[in-house]
Structure formats: structure tokens, C-alpha cells
Length: 415
Image (cartoon, rainbow, N blue to C red; front, side):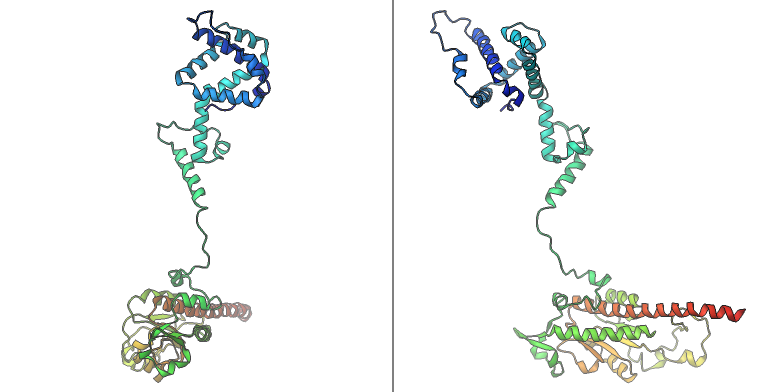
């Protein structure tokens, strides 16, 4: 269907009716060249149009345009072009010459809806596929034809437009538990909650047939033959263990992370590196703490409270002395009972993840949780290392303040 007539042209419907009458007269003369003069006289178009309203007149034009064939459209365009350019003489031409306003409106109408119709269709197509703001932002962008491939600029704009439209689809989910983030960026103990422990699967225990009476206070209940760990107590005991780790690191103590299960090496490495500690990911060598001959050949050096080497040579007695860790964090105590017994003999405090089948009395600071869940182990190890890191940073800040305060005293002494 052809576009509707402009408002200015519609306001001049009286003159347009006259033009339509003249056009119909010329069409009747062309069609009825062979007709006889005895044909009954038809009602004049002016009489018919006099009773029609403005809306009916415009609707009639559109209805007639729909019924026109392509050849008739081309013939009408050619006739209008000849009339407007003055290439032919007709009563319609004389009428247009008398009304310059109507002539300019009709000429603009023909240019917009016949000559520039193809460009308008391309603009509408680009607006639909590239967005409505393309013409305003990129006024010099030439849309490609339908039989031509998209240009680089059009492909870029189409991509942006599709991303903008599809970005509104769906919902934005917040507070989602993402397990792999706990390795590189674990939460602090203040950010930890029961919901995070529950999402990590820390509440799942073992079968009630593996129940140990020493863990009765950690069990919340039973579900389908499996004990459920009370996460409120898990959070409480974990906060206590974090305070211990922070205190040991703040006094320059050595924190050792031990986990001998497959797949825990990356967790241990990240945790030990974060707080400046050490880790053991392989099988624990029996006698490492109780037998000095096992580790007497390891290289040793003396460091300051700022973890800087002093450069002093150690004596023979100091080199043979065992360097024991000040705190051991065990991720799987059930499989490292030898380590726990050595720690008890050498009076080294331990922190361990105690499942429902583990013995809590072997660990100094137990944390009731599921030690078989990689997510739970990663979360707990990350929280403990974050607490030890806070203690280490506090120690380094205090050491730097001490060094800065001693600098003026040393300068006065030299003078």
C-alpha cells in the first residue's frame, strides 16, 4: 500500500479533488476512445465527491492504489512526472500552473513516495535491524542493498543492537555461590555465613554406622541414614580457629598446611602462599617432628620479624636444632593420625576439619565439617589462610613502624 498523503496536501483536498476529476477525465478519454457517443451519461465525479468526506476521499485514493497493477503504477508515475516537468500539456497541467502551492506539494509528494521510496525502504530496514538511533548517531551511513553483503560498519552496528536487545532477556541472579573463586579470592571470616557453608556442602556427614561418640555435640540430626552437621557450631569453631591462626602469624609463627588427598595441592599452595606459610601435599613422612635426623640436613637461615634474612651464620647447635611449625592446619585428619600424634608429642597446636567419622580429641582446635567435599575444604582453608594473612600484615606493619621509629635514634647515635 502506498503511504498516506501528507497533511498539507490533505488540507487542500478541494484542489486535489479537482485534480482527481481531471485525471479521471483523461483516463476515460484514453480508455473509451472506441466508445460511441450514445453511451448513457454517467454521473460526474464532482457530484459524487461532493458528498464524500475528507477521510473517505483519502481512503478512496489508497484503495484505488492497492488495486493498481505494477504497469499501471509505472504509467501513472510517468504521467505525473511529465505533468510536473512540463513535458506535456493537459487540463491538469493548466490547473497546476494556476496553483503553485499545490504544484510544489504534489511534486514533493511524488519525489518522496516514488523517486525516494527505495531509500526510505532501506532506511526502515536498517532501522529495524540496526536500531532506531543509527540514523541520528551515524547520519552518513549508507545502507547496503538486499542483494549485497553487509558492510563492516553495519555488521558492527548489528552486533551492538542485538547485544542490547538480548541483554534485556532473562533475569539477573545475585548472591550466587561460585566455587572456583574460593581458591584465589576466599572470603574473610567476617564475610562467612551459614549459607556459604551450606552451599559448599559442609553439612553432609557420613553414615550413622561410622558415628563416633566424641562428635555427638557437632551433629544436628539424621537424614536418610546420614548425619547432618550443625553449621552454627561449624561457624563458631571456625571463627575460633581463625583467631588462633591470626595470633600465631602476628607473632611471627610458622603456619604449616597439610593435605594428602589427591587434588588438594593447588588449595594448599594458594593458602600457604597467601599467609607466608608452608604446605605438605604428599604423604607425611613419619618422624618429621619427632626424629631430628630426618630433617637435620635441610638448609636454614635466621630471619627478622619482617621476614628478611639477617645474614648471621648459625652455630652448629642451632643448625642441628629442629625448626618446628607453630601451627599445623590439617585438611584430612583421618588419614594423618601419625602427624597428629607427633604434633601432640612435640606440643604443636593443630587445626583440623573433623567429619562425623573422625576423632575430635586428636585435634587441638577442631572444625566440624565435611572433609570429603572439595568445596568445603577449599572454603575453610581459604578462610584460615586469610586470617593468617591478616596477622602477618599486622606484624609487618608493626615492624615497619618500629624501624621508622628507630631511624632517628640511630642517626643521633652516629652524630
